Image (cartoon, rainbow, N blue to C red):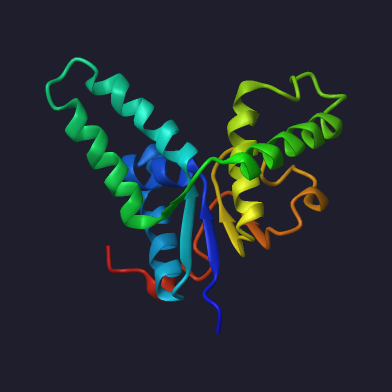
Amino acid sequence: MKSPIVYFDTSVFIGLLDNMKGRQLAARDIVLYESGVQSKIHTSIMTVNEFISRTYDEYHDKSNLKEKVDEVIQSIRDVAEIQAFNQDVAKEAARLLSAWGRHRKLERLSPRDKKFRWDAIHMATANLIRADRVYAWDGPWNDFPKAEIPRIGQIISPAFAPQANLFSSPS
């Protein structure tokens, strides 16, 4: 039996590692569930970029900056395999930006706004690796036209463990 392929958006790591909006327990339940069903968890190098920018903001003038950045990167690697940004991802993300623009042409927000550029890279990566499940707490995951991301099986946003109590550790 093939191990499920799972993709975590940056928001899952922000919940897990920083407990943003009190999401650490829910994020931990997701990791425990996916580990329990022997999923292969992935994320994008964009997660590293998005996440460590916060570390640079906080530790920019501290002597332990490099160690803190390396610690954060290792924390992400401990959970997920990091997918590279390459030509295939760039082309797929550009295609998704174009599709998003067509989908949102009547909206007030620019279809090529800076925030969606990151989400497009996440979506492109998840689509290219054929993720069975994608977890996120932010972004347009639920609103994006599913026909444009056919290799993504299930989008779970807002993120929660499919069977939270099955693999949860006692609190």
